[in-house]
Length: 194
Image (cartoon, rainbow, N blue to C red):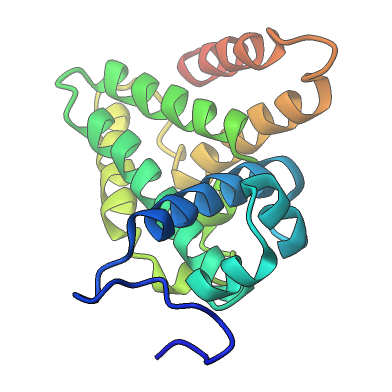
């Protein structure tokens, strides 16, 4: 039930009104952008301003920071699983590992909080099922190891470390060298397959 001081966002059938659906999407897009640029501690007022809505609208849709963080974490889990599933479907182990790493590097370049989702260290990630992502990553790595493409001790932690490295380059040099993340990705891939 909506609090008395806030207008309802649902229509007579209980579905979100068209304007409420639009506002919800605008808020989620703004939250992802703000979190990606500034981390998950960005004030809700900044998210509301970026979405072009009031703070009350953010609260009406998400109930505050935990709700919006959970929605963003869910979207990140979908993004991660999309990358890992695509990689796991590749028949060639080398192509699969490249697809996994490059996909994760691209995600991290555009979303600095994606590594929180990968490690489930974000407070909201306990609600997000990343089991499929984990299974895909292990499958890709196991196939690469069996093919002799990576060392026997290469594992999921290395995938995370490599993703963090590319992210650090993207964060540190994004204003002075827009090609730096791609060059870092290429160097890291050479090292992995060295």
